[in-house]
Structures are given as structure tokens and as C-alpha cells.
Image (cartoon, rainbow, N blue to C red):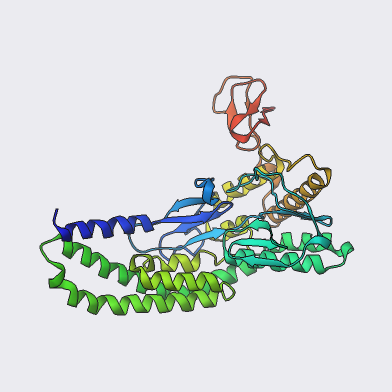
Length: 389
């Protein structure tokens, strides 16, 4: 294999590698092709990846290899529990997340000091409180915790209820989506042009041309496309995520030094565009009816019958906080479903038996059907099976 062919192969492998997007544990991911079409109703598909990289507390999702490179949105379910008593760095299992292995310690509101967002982490007094999917999410959560801590003790429960329900707001989600629609088309044109230039180089090197024969033409096309991509990416990120300074600095430097990463700049800019939005609400706005129904069904099943273990520890106060917050999440989700015209009880009607022999049971969480009179669902950590009526 000639040196130019080897270089072309290396560039191709790097591009495929860049197609894998690393997201923090707890993410609900929406993927689509193109920007204008993806951000219309029905243009995206939801995914809740499990824990693939435990050491990094991260998961991996696959994006498109070929243009148009549509957005990959990472959404944040609640990463902690709280009540009027305090904050618990634990949340019951749900789409995209697993219960924390360590035994969490309840932090009373009066002891919550110096709340700060450090990258995707929310810390208080040097202690990690939550791992968020992005810097934008951690900044929002840190602000919320500070506001609730500063509120009067008797007002904290209502403040938490309001915060839980505010995440379901359709108007706020649609406003953010409109902002992405305005900022990303120009960046998408630049990233696709940059990809075409780099692909032309790879094809030329894989053919009969030597690098010395094509480099003047390559630089003449590459430099304008690359510089334009970096500048547009920085501007779009500053508009959509004004507070995510460290992420913007990282995006700018990596895009400037690694052109194959710059090709994915539109994905990086759009990824956290819906920070602060409940995943079910975003799925309802961006995905088709069936995908939205399935996701809402899965979320409701997790809230009504969480995977085991569904309690944080043996500590009575921690269990109280977790149970209270879980009940508020369930109430808010069911209220939102009814407002959207969906009956929660009908959504969780028993699955089809599909001709299985009687007696038969099913798991109320994952809805798998069993030919057992009784038992537990191993996939859900031991959730008791329910008999068909």
C-alpha cells in the first residue's frame, strides 16, 4: 500500500470514529438527518443508551457517516432527588439512567453551600451533587439548587414542584428549537462543504495523485471552508449556550486543530440546545406520534414501577426524600399526559398476549410477557410479574 493510500485510509478511519458521539450516563438522545427536516415534527428518533463506558460514566451513540450531518440532541432527566428536607444525590432508575451504586448521603438545604457548576458536575462545598449531561444542564441545576436553598423552608416544596412541572413547557422547547433552526443552517452548509473538500483529498490520495500534486488546490478550498466552519460554530454556540464558556472554548480549539472534528461542529452546537427540557416533552415536539407514545409509555412505566432496587439506602430520611420526589415526578408526568390528551391508565394497559398459553403474566415495567403463573422480571432487577386479568 502506497503512503498516500495509507494516509487516505487513516483519514477515513478517523472520520468513522468521529461518527460515534460520547454522552454522559443519564442522557436521552434524539437523532436525525439534516437540520431543517430533523427539527420538524417527526424528524428525530429517541434513544436512551445504557451504561457502556462505566469508568467514564458515559455512553456512546452512533451518528451519520455521510452528510447531511443532522443534530444529535442530548436531554437530561433529573439526576438527583430533593424535597423540603434536602438534596439526595440519587434518582430512581429510568430511561437512560441506572440507580447509583454508592449509598448517597442526604444534604440538608441549610448545609448546601457554595453550589457551583464545574463542567458537567454540580458540586456543593467540594462534594459532588450530580453528574449532568452537559455544562448547560449543570449550570441550570446549580442555579435551581441555589434558589431553593435561599427560599424559606416552608416554600421549598412548592418551589420544587414548580421546577419539576416547568420542564414540561412546550413553549420553551419550541422557542429553543426555533433558535437552533435560525443558527444552524449556515453552519451546516459550511460543515458539509468542509466534508466535501476533505473527501476530495482522500479520493485524490487513494487514486493516482501524490500530495504534492493536489495540495495547492486543496488548501485553496480547505482554508475558507475550515475557517468559516470554526467561526460559525463559535458564534452559534455563543448564541445558543451563552453560559457554557469552557465548552465553547473546547469546541473552538478542537475544531481549529482537527478539521475532521470540525465537520461535526453542527452536532456539537445543537447537542445541548434543549437543556432544561423534560425528555418526554422534547420527544413529543420532535418525534412522530408512535415514537412519542412509546417513550411516554416507557417513562410512565418507570415512574409507576421503577427497576429494582428502587430505594437509595436504609437511611429513613434519604428514603423519604427519594419517595417524595419520585411521587412528584410521577404526578407531573401524568398531569402532562392528560394535558396532551393521553390517559395514563390506558397508556399502561396490559400488552397483547400474542397467543401465549394461559396462565400468563407480564412485567409492568418493560412489558415483557411470560408463561409463568408468578415470578419476577430479571431484566428489571426483580420487579414482580402481574397476571393478566
